[in-house]
Length: 279
Image (cartoon, rainbow, N blue to C red; front, side):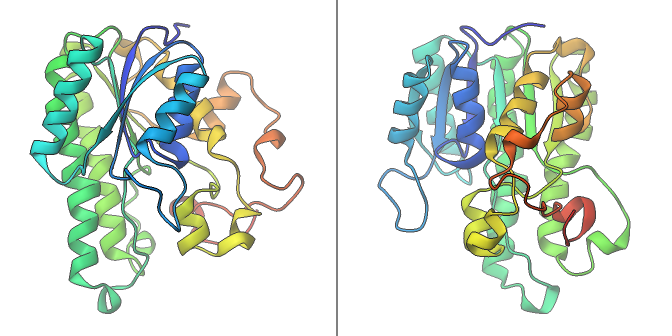
């Protein structure tokens, strides 16, 4: 298995949560990280900024460049890509983590939220991939990893959250298409999704507060799975829809208890895999 020493990762949504955890894990190998996010100043409800994330990455052993950018806007992402390439000489890995969420049925979905989810989740993922691909083609063991769920056309996944499901599946369709389109270039394109709820700001603020967090796993679970994917040979490891625990178990990590926020607590299954409840 390879490692991420001196590899350059362009990670959206890297100021907090799963994106930051992936960045810090890569930094332990001595990777270079472009921290791509909107948060320049501390937010009352959201932890971290691009600057604090960059500091934590450097403390972990990596190098970082903070890139204040909204992935809805091409000029901002192009500027972030240009700055990353200027500082580190290229891009080897793209992680599309940034996402917007609104778990509402059709009649309760405001078009402003609909537009936000499609602009961030679908368009933003496509845009970041498009602008990074010229550098990934020249990268060392290049990967794209989208934080998106496995595709499943069962109507139950659409019935109550149609807009959000379509937008997240748009990210997954990028995996399906780009994995085939860029297979000849040796660029791996994969998706990764958690088995259970993950203790992020979205879970705390939108999906049940502290109680939901207490029935979640930590972002480090997804980060460790992402690391195992991103260190595989790109020509042999593409077009997959991975689940975090399956990746870890496949690589011999079978004791997952350390990832629980509250040891021994029942875990809340992820929406896209179970549709709610506890396990």
